[in-house]
Length: 278
Image: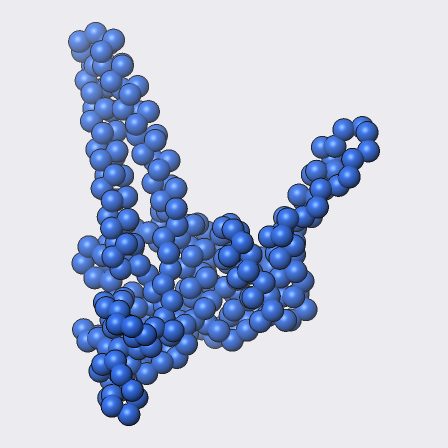
């Protein structure tokens, strides 16, 4: 599938629309006496400027403005999604992959985010389009494509309430079918609650030890850190490949990538990690 700047699904107007709705809402909610309209915050101004830059084709400027908004505290998945679109249109697929991954961590089931990530992966060689995680880490990575930490928290809260309600019902019900049903519900809710706790612990441990990382610029992989004339190139990785960082040594990282059991070294600037969503 060919990935042109028009292929990804876009939400370029969301940031500007959010700013406009915020300003209109403050005016509509104002009392009868005249009040000075509230001014947009610094982040809202950055998002509005980014949307305008994207609309005029200044994609590099749009990406920088979205980055500044994220640094200023913007955490909505739509902002990361639009940042990915801007980087992709600016010809930086590696940085787009990072932004899409951050958006997916916040909204793992969003159809537009999933579509753009899949379209971006389709541009990679088939052997490099997967994830380097294997075993239980691979299972964690797959689970995170469908459910986020916030979803896990809501599920755990629902299970806790179900457990509490079932425990009360079991105490009050007379011996018989209703008590057995209440106990079954309590057992199932307790199992879900423990599963949520185990999943959350696994996600946190995985994110702390080996967070997701992407190659942000095409780079040769060497057999060790050091000066280029002393090293042997063992592979070439294009921008956008997801990798697993195995070791850090000053300005170098040792990493593994999909499609091979080997590993190699690249300059640290060529790789960017994706912090887990809260």
